[in-house]
Length: 445
Ligand code: PLP
Image (cartoon, rainbow, N blue to C red; front, side, top):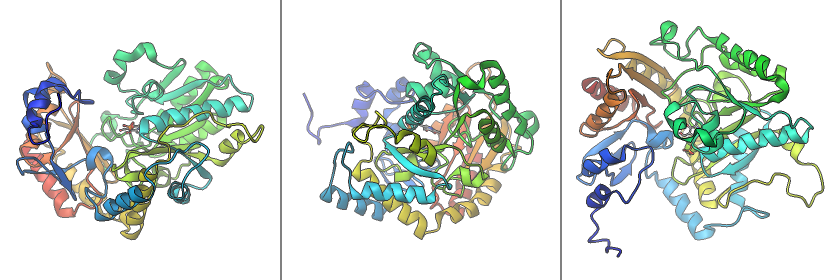
């Protein structure tokens, strides 16, 4: 029997466990349910039902760089809901979605001229993997079926993304459902030579040569694509060594393998450029994006695709569907209207430049922790940073969880993955807010 809204007690209901929360220690939440509710959000802060404020240290889940309840986004959403709240994206579409595709292409590296919309990063990754398979098959190279990901990579939770991903606890339970023929490059986190790096580590470009080793093992004629996050986000901001991505590009080109940058986190300004591809001056064959494209307000993802890949599909009878793929909500008009508003705000407020100036502040702030007891590494690039804590030898992850819980009672909503805390504050945060975040954190570690 449904309770009326006035009877409803979310603390009790959450404790009862009807809502099975994603990527969450659910039993821990059920014991502490009163501390796990967020009532509202404005700018860089959340407010709890008790009225406490929490600084949003990770821009939502890397997705709200413009902060919460931005009036122009709220307005765009309202206007679009009154104008066209939904229309199918199959065989017809609508002007706001087409406009957003045009604008994303205009921001992208030259040659990535087509956008396929999805609803999430996971769907964007699976879409890109399918485009890679389709592209090779259409060119008569259907033997190229292998995908190469990277250790510690995160590409979402669909079976495609999970298979190329490299975060072991995410994969362990689902090994039986993985794609065939996936292999992984080594990750580039090398604390022996690169601990406490500011920006890109100088050494480690040669780790890209792993691709040559895998090609020698499997033969290039069986490999469809390599997918990497230019900066590995979810595992804790692992920054590519100088020259690493360029080397990967060269090897992919040499072996006829497609290179996919998963920019679900790095896309739309997190590194002070539209995409990481521009920051690192390396152009992949496809870019996956999601999150910040709509400031997290309405779910949306997508894939930017190189012209000749798209062209390869645009063959055969004109009445035929060229790519038998898509989602009920692909190119959703509400998401697209919000996406257009997000790009307006980013452009008008020069937010990518702002990220570059805040990068220095965040770098200074986090590296003050370099010598803190129990801190084993600190890394940063763009408006993103991570701090590794020495794990408890008996209970790995317990320090991270404790820090997260301490944050809740000290005004910070933190993101801890295992014993690593990642920081990716909103682009609209001030230098003072970044420093205050660092000081509070230093007191909790
Ligand atoms: N790819 C990357 C690089 C991500 O960081 C994420 C999410 O954090 C995803 C894919 C999956 O996105 P979603 O959670 O929207 O499915």
